[in-house]
Image: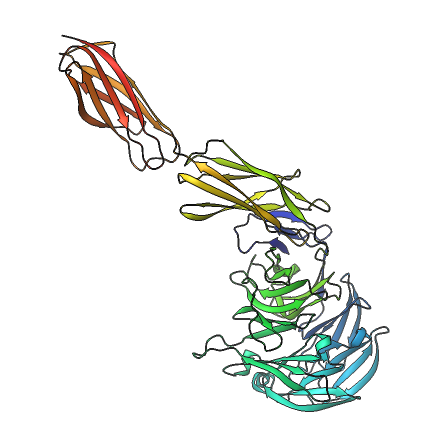
Length: 576
């Protein structure tokens, strides 16, 4: 499993480390830390329908068979990824939900809802329900269990079957009167809000699938808000894979296979003012889950190769802290997060991810421990640069120091840098922070004038971002130079032969330099034919003097936008 932080798709040079005890590769990009620990269990199932986390007993429940005639199983794992039990059922199971205080586990079967005591894992009841052949979904909200049922003769008909919403009340499962087409998805809203979420998948064939929320505080559900997402041209329709309410009940996150992660206002399901950054290119959204403490959100995806399949980040979309990214690859990990395959422990200390791979009938459980504490960081002192006289087209070093609270990072921190000049903003990539906190940003400014360097630390899951630090550097023209040599004496008949060299530092000239040549003698000053510098920087001047005595030859180059000009002279005594 490859793990990486990336800061809003900034180019990142991956660093490689090995997770202790797992033999799995971790790729840590700028401002990155691998998860504190990571356990992976290969699940003995060939299908998947639901996941529930019991933080009271520290157990994870995974429902196996979604539909068909085979016997189903609910797998029970602890928070270390060890299998605790397997709750066998005579027929297919298709969904799990936990009641108040995690005291009761509810399991959906084709013809009933079964309950278990979560302390003893003993079955405590079985409640008859309308027969379901499409995979009964369960959700606990408003103090009761809600489920779906749909009956068809062939499983392929489930995509467009009529699905009803049921409730388990006083030991009886009964229909509520709400129904629609397709395998309707259910998810609880925040407990304090007594809200139930319902979504229609794209496979239902509906031209514009819906998302809805219900008030379930009373005996019957009352719809509060509903939304269809397609525009007037039919574009942007919902492709629902998963949905989750924030713990405070103010927002709903939706995993949309087409649009990525949608963040909505829970009250009316309108778009929230802030949205999360896009998933990595090539990743299709499959799952979403808020941590129980509301600090983090996990966003799951299916992606090929080393493209991240899981992002763990601040639940606040305005927080610029780079996400922790995981790329699941191959037979040890699965190839991506399965739909509805994410859940957190109540305190946010563990994230559970179910991944799918192979032919789509192999599953893994990942137990991830994101760092739970964040420490402050700060830049100390001012930025410095060298050389002190910066010139266009030559290397420039910008140096500074970053300090952090808490323990030393497991992997080197990274800072990012930007240069702003008259031509706009230029990303300079990342620089590694050394153990003593110092860092060096390397650049080659290509424009004369003021260049402002801004260095940023965007933070990670254990370190908060630091306020940016800036320094303005005056970039001058690169120097150029000329040399000119000639004989001490010459004659008017044999002429004068001069040689010289031209050099220009900084950025290479777009074409060879052309030099002016002037001759000064007792008759006055005049211009001679210009000369072009050879590729190796040399040039020659040949002249037949017009008079005797001292003759001074001067060559010059006027310079350009990035280079200073230069002149050189030599005096020759000319005889008849």
